[in-house]
Length: 256
Ligand SMILES: [Zn+2]
Image (tube, rainbow, N blue to C red; front, side, top):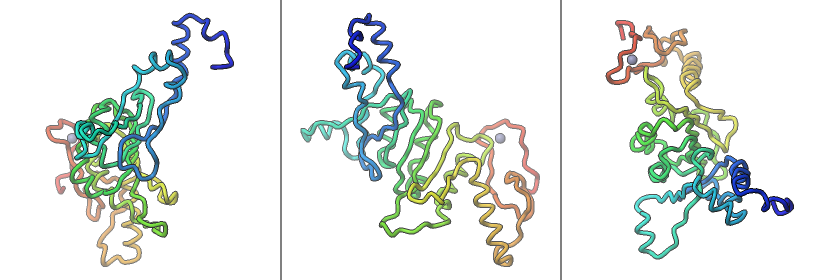
């Protein structure tokens, strides 16, 4: 804006509209325990000038994202300045660590797009998955990053998806799937592709067929049917369920 000299001469209302139109969506890393990237700096517009800052600040939320047991008050008592990140919840994708998720979403209950750096899929499944299930309808997409290999020489494991099978099944293998879309990737290994609600059943089905082709005795019968909701001899998936209290019309065959 420094080269656009007439700008300060524009009416305040117009200047404010221009500030608003200049706000861009960002991917904002917040909170503690991040391992793949650093906490994001504030959006540059908030530093453009005091007028922009005071006008735009209302669109942003300060996010602290402390991991337990370090609370905001505890930090204040320790006389350290609290570190926060600015998030525009209507535009920004929020990137956080698994172990700060509860704090981050309590500060940003209306978050729409989340990226979570995972460290422990087991802990997630048993202790944290209800956090997302109980979030408001604004949540649209959750991208989970499979844990990074522990060392630089860590190798690709073609069965990495098995760690996420229970989570996907609990969210989507039902007549009342969760309202948000889950995507799971392993950033260090592009060949891992992506796990999502549209392919997680097929990934497992393909794997079982491959195993069965090699060793039919050990793996029993295998159905040709790709409809995982259907009950049939040798079908792949048990456990498809109705959500409690549902009145949907889908009826399982009687042998299920
Ligand atoms: Zn149902």
